[in-house]
Image (cartoon, rainbow, N blue to C red; front, side, top):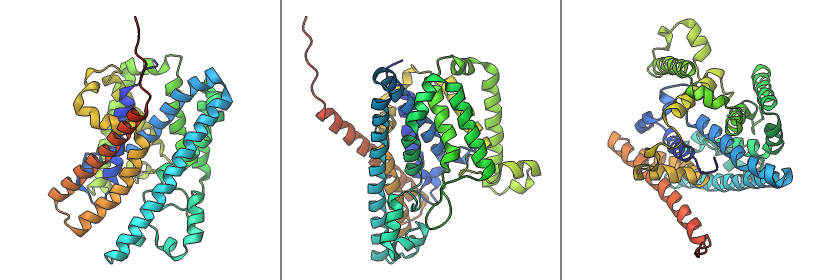
Length: 370
């Protein structure tokens, strides 16, 4: 269908809210997010929906206008995300440095991984521009930039031979995990989100978006996959809660060996299966035309999903502000709730403003005549 799928906007908006809450250290409100109840979290949802929407938008462009036009569109979007990342990088570092100096909180320089940047700004800024140096919490957009920048030839092949692309993506995923492939970070270490592994979830999202065989629809309607997914989610809930509350040693050794700790960097298979199981259940229970999707109560989350890039950047910056305010003023439960709600409200205000600006700038539609 050509009309907008509100489920994508809704869950992308909720993912942005969850990322903000999860990035505020020691925030009790973060217990409402999915990361505390299973192997996957908002990052998995963000990458999957990104792959889905990019393929949905640019596959039609590639089919109608050719590879070059669609590739330019995808690369232009990747450049836009890169510019947003660099702007966020500069503002984020400046804010942390100012707060650390102004309020004598030097420990923030270590907690947010910018002390060495302060000591050698030219070298670290150079590697920041190359996406090799990333302060704490600035890992998602570089992953997205790499996935977008390399996507045009993948999309071209995905339109023509989707099974081959999916299998090739799986082989790269499996090989990267087996051979420990990853991109280097500066000055040491590797990327927190291994792009060789996370590309598989991105490609799965794109493949689902372009499925013309009815495979996805049959999976959604089938009872066996649905109840298998439910069983896996229940199992992952038990393992995750046991690990959260310190009961992991009481679990069977086989479970501890394979599921704890949760390997987010290399997108552990159980993490991938958990997200796909959750997506299958949601797709089964929430049809595209579900009436509640147009409810005014969901409008804040919907517009945050529509303006995802701006809201994501705002949320990352606000997560630092929230952390500092909680540390400076109060860490009580009531104040954590207040700060969390205020942060989500500000993110929604950013989305509403950007939507209003878009509508104001849009040319008026011509009046229809009889």
